[in-house]
Amino acid sequence: MKTPEAQAEGKVFGAGAEEAAGSGVRHGTAPAPGRDRVAHTEATVIGTSPIERTTVAEPGSDPAAPGREAEEAAGSGSELMTINLGPHHPATHGVLRLLVSLEGEIVRDLKPIVGYVHTGIEKSCEDKSYWKVIPFVERMDYVSYYFQMEAFCGAVERLIGLEIPERAKYLRVIHLELNRIHSHLVWLGTSALDVGAMSMFFYCFRERDRVLDLFEMSSGQRMHTRYFQIGGVFEDIPVGFAEKVRAFCAEMPSRIDQYEALLTRNEIFLRRTKGIGVVPRERLLDLGVTGPLLRAAGEPWDLRKAEPYLSYADHEFRIPVGTIGDGWDRYRVRVQEMRESVRIIEQALEGLPEGPWIADDRKYVLPPRNELSTSMESLIHHFKLVTEGFRVAPGEVYNAIEGPRGELGCFVVADGSAKPARVHFRDSSFVNLQVLRDMCMDEYVADLIQNLAMLDPILGGIDR
Image 1 (cartoon, rainbow, N blue to C red):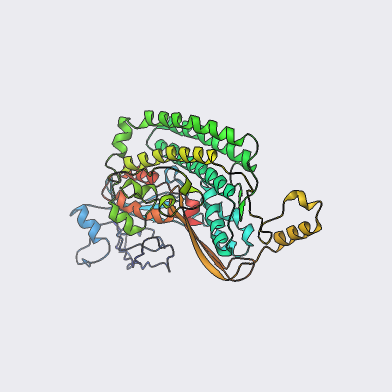
Image 2 (cartoon, rainbow, N blue to C red):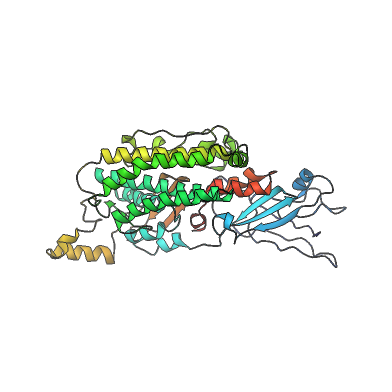
């Protein structure tokens, strides 16, 4: 179906920019009698995108109009068809809408449209005391909730100058790396399912369930545990936890061997990933892409090595990197990262120091439960912290950690009150979503599904 020309004014965004100002879309003139108008999104167009233009130029039209570049690439006389992929689509890994311009089966343009699960979590954090913010932030990227807690708790601890005990650092690392394995298992199972390997989904979720069992044992909850506290962790690990984690670490490498036996030399998987979605390392750096996507292109950037935090400097591990940054390299990097996470957990358990698991600064930390029934001062202190919270001197800080999808940063502004004046997250899924267009341009629409899966996007973190 032929449609009239729609002109769009785009705003060019820098790498990692996350705020769009206004709709930025101006519609064209009314359609000629007897012709239909396509529905237009009010989302801001990133750059000069021809995504809204679905036909070749009419005689006498502006040669510089948006869409001319895609039409020239498509060839004279060809017709572009614009379709919606999502937001209700199982292969979008969440409520994500992709506006895709196709010439036959070839993707000529693509624009992600987000915001369908916007929760306003960052704004809600401004109305809560600091320690009550923790349950909010771990529900943004709901697959890697321990990393959300660490980003925020670490930022507040830097603001108030609070040093956490060594045992707490090791316990945090153990849970973070278990969560990294958990996140990569969810990614591997769902990504393999997208290309037809259904059995991988069941195998990966088998090990994921064991990780959740460990979380339940240490915190009482399988997901959204609120185990990390400002000053350390909520409670010491229970008796038998270390032995169960060691048993998991002893078995996990053989499970990873099984995953690779199914996929690494599978002809269908190789054809769907090798040479697909290649993006140069320089382009990834320009866009601010981090994590496995960047390392798969040959850039060994990992904040655990570049800017060590917690106890990562005490552990020996390698940073897996790829060569050309295609789907195959992204798969290999994440699989090897699971192996390295197992090594880190084993070393952290072996070197786990004795001592307290949370700081003893009663200005910021709740008193032990056993004191509440014997000490009136502890009871009053507990009541004041729970109802009013603690005040933080005016200041601001940005705390960045290495999440499963790349750099996860938390920016906190304090104004002297018991509530943060501003909480903002640099979510790696949001920043990495920029590269999807580069991965899919002039490739088959079937490869779009695989490329999106290799991004490993979490829409709760993108929209938040």
